[in-house]
Length: 270
Image 1 (cartoon, rainbow, N blue to C red):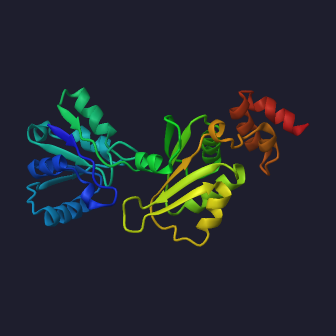
Image 2: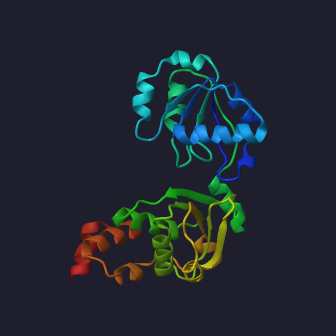
Image 3: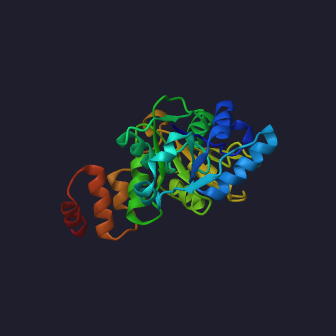
């Protein structure tokens, strides 16, 4: 049996009793990063006076999971086996889904344990009064893909949850302040950790407040839905007014309106 075991996203006490019991039984652990998992087990052993017997640690992350699974000896699954991502629920913007599919395709028993998840924590903490939301995970790093995804998020009728790294959070806040300055957003960094920090307000207010803040840490940003809170949707006029090359502008307008890129490019040239 293989168990997918969520790990704390910050506070070590968020590990469940059941997770601790199963970790103590596991002979083999698949890990997003073996170093992080070993360090976590050391801390948990000290805090809860436990002994973990896992000796076989197998590195399995987004860059090697297919290769690992194609060469794995299935006998390893005859014992209690666990999979751990670095933090939080496996398979949510983290590896794990490929191993789930492997279990399904090979009729191997598996179970997903409930546990910590940064997206849900941020959504509830935001106080948004809606029961519908979209989880985007990480936006593309740059270029038109990022702009397209951000415009989709801003025009969604639902609350949108984004993950962002400390290297790009300033850029994301600037983009939100430019394209939807009066939209209500909620941003939280290092959730459940000692230096957790929260920002709530319009995009412009959050931009101003974050200017003097330490932005290091992992972020979750919740964007309120436009139709629920009176924010402004991205319009054709907004896109036409952007200082972008005609080809890029035509792609964005095509995505927004459903008209062809070629037709929009022709209109922009006239």
